[in-house]
Image (tube, rainbow, N blue to C red; front, side, top):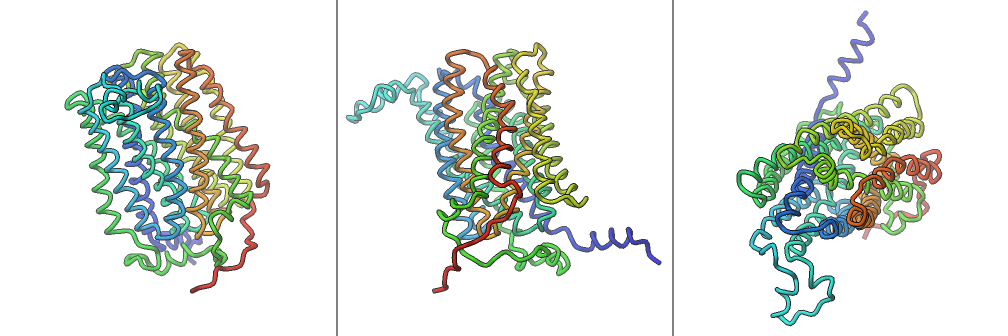
Amino acid sequence: MPDARALGQTSAVSIGWSRWGICALLFFATTLNYIDRQVIGILKPDLAQQLGWNEIDYSNIVFAFQVAYAIGYGGAGRLIDRIGVRRGYFLAVLLWSLAAMAHALTRWIPPEAKVGDWAAPMGYVAGNWLLVMPMTVLGFSAARFALGCAEGGNFPAAVKAVSIWFPRKERALATGIFNAGTNVGILIAALLVPGLTIAFGWPMAFLMTGVLGFAWLAAWGLHYRDPEAHPHLSPAELAHIRSDPPDPVVKIPWLALLRYRQTWAIAVGMFLCAPIWWFYLYWVPDFLNKQYRLDLLHLGPPLVVIYLMTDVGSVGGGWLSSWLLQRGWSVNAARKTTMLLCALCVVPVFMASRVSGLWTATLLVGLAASAHQGFSANLYTLVSDTAPRQAVSSVVGIGGTAGAIGGMVSAKLIGYVLQWTGSYTALFGIAATAYLVNLAIIHALNPRLEPMQFDVPPTPRR
């Protein structure tokens, strides 16, 4: 008689791997997303010196991105639910690649030029704050605004694709894998950008990283289809993907989603944890530069260590909750236990600015960033746990908008804290406690992780 375990393994293999190929495309898109947005964080110390920026100037550039990201995230979520993942994701990557390349256009602006110098001949009237702003700050802010609008489409599209292509028991792992692209993107940027900048100047760093998106567009157009239309998907794998009970067939207005506490749990979760991630992304290179005098050539190794650790956290956080589900845990217990462990792992980061050794600080930040990614992978998965597929992108969009608003507030706060105090101590202290507070609020809003119960009638077909 054949061994039951062998039969189970054979059956699992025979299902097929097409869904993981789709996950690979999501991973590479997220990688590109973070290559493009991380370039400015790596170049910040050098750009600030060459272009005469202070901490508040830099915070204004980050703020412009966050405003646009808030707009783009919410708008893209709704758009992708309407036009579908294939077209929506293609449009997002095309636009953010062009926006990334547009940063290089500011190379023709003299560093000493102010807005008032350029605006006065045209009869432009502005407040004193704008008139004294360097033109390079305004130029970078415009490019970051365009980038933020387009990059807001990444996570709504990717999370929706996971909800379409994976059964519930695999979604956290798939989300963790594509979310690991954020860390790989930062790693590639850390390795690629210094060399490009030293060899060809900082504009080339923005041009070359933007060009990478066009290769992905070709692969996406050739290979992505919904499961029912995919030419290489086996009947067994399609049955596996559709093994969950069907979602209710109902259309719910976007604003009506705000009536559900499940939506607010996601929105609050992203509002509180996204600003911490932005802090790591945009200010850790500057922290290492100021605390340990690391120049552009020597920033790479610590950043590589930090973001290799975050890859482990992203995949490990998704794997752990999926493993607990396979062991018979409820969705509620599996997701929240994993998130609690991640929140506890962040706490030691409050010591990062107080330790004397570079590598001790690097490991503390790496552990915290890794735990953030594990927390985030499960937070994104809560959307597909509690919302039907046809509303997933919209809910992710609402949550992402809340996260971007939190990032807007934190960008200005961080800029002023650093300008006034010159210290990162308070900022790492906030980061250390944010996730425990976050999880407590999520649990209060949805203690049993119940799915949305629709109380609106289906929209009639016209």
